[in-house]
Length: 614
Image 1: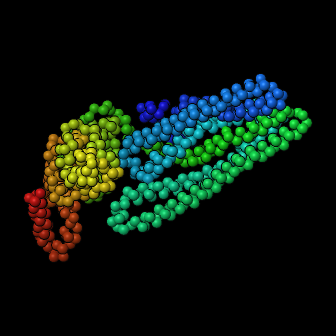
Image 2 (image 1 turned 90 degrees about the horizontal axis):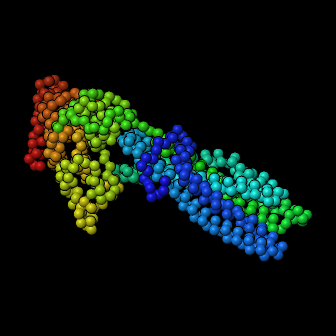
Image 3 (image 1 turned 90 degrees about the vertical axis):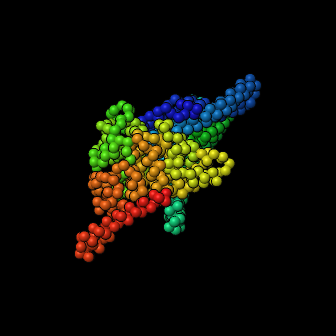
């Protein structure tokens, strides 16, 4: 896989049983790239380590006054120089390709898993942890994948040089062959402690990232309640914990780096001391001593990669563990489904609550518990986060459809939809039936003032649709974000549209116009709206009260307000004391009934007044 071929058509099925197994799986899927990097690395490292032999031959040629051998040695030096240049260039190219393709594979796997899980992801894993995995963890995993081939080339080069020195000059080669493994293995006792410290640093950094992400996401709320300093102090403490852990980890790695410098120096001293004695005894030539000395000196270059691979593994292992934990999450139902992707049609029915949304009608659902409403809305979309009885569209269970087909048939907009950064035109460029245009959807969602605000904020854009929206739409008010999200859902024009509190952040007059716009634009399509707003409820073809997990009442809004006290309590925010307590104190049920009737009449009068104003 080359960089220009990205993204992968299929990133594969990862081994998520553990972090090391996930890293091994990544390596196995890049054998071609790893082999190329290994071969180029061998060319580079062997060319570097071939220089001492050339220098030794050159010195010996000068001692023996042999011009021909000196010329041959010069040619070998040129050949080694060309190998160093070519090998280094291509090794870097191949290693970076491995890093980018591995990171891209992990990113695609995370994106696929996030899309598959939907809202269930953030119920199982903190949003900050997902951000940390998709940014910092991906980088560390890529670093290890990149370092593997360089380490392999360095290790083979060290073995080759040791064998070559033993053959070239056995008396000194044996000293090097014994000393080099000691150099490579001397830091092994320190690695577990360094790894533990790196793990602690990674955990604390992850918690700090989660805290920062959550703080930024709730910054508007924090400013409203004056909680900026409280969360800033928390982040300061978390940041200081990360700094302390990073310093402790750096001390251990500094000790390892110091040992990697000290031991080669001691080996070099031992080689020189032994070589001088052998030269004095006439057992080796001057050129051979220079060759062995230069080889030991240059061996420190490939040996550095032993430290690098240890660091890369120590930092990437916890990152791989976190990535594997996210990628191991699965849906309660099979995303592939057991049916083909043919889209069914008909009424939407939930057997768990016995909620029925007739085909082609606007059904409003009233739940006293907002969390229960969110869970029910998710279940109506098919493939819920938790295993439960399947919702039926017509006579077809939605969880038996492939996930993409179920999402095409039923679109669920939750109460806190996300707006991605980019132009408004890009935001509204979503898969759709083509029956509803951007202008119609924006008009139905009452986005005229949003377009005006975007045009004023970016006069150079010309067309408001080309104006840029910041990340998560933070430059817009809550009501503006909500209306743009609604317009995006209306453009999609699915068979069934489920809206969870789509107008909770807008004023009553705008809400009345939105209710009418949804009703007109969705004529002939099935629409389910979870709301307690009288304005939306009054325009619904059918209103359903869900109480304690099951349907408690069905009818029209005005009739339910009169007849059902539980419905009235949710819609009018009337407390039990207000509805019953005063009547009990008066000792008359007739008075309580009269008062309830008066409340209902007042609500209806208010609705009519709003309608006339709107």
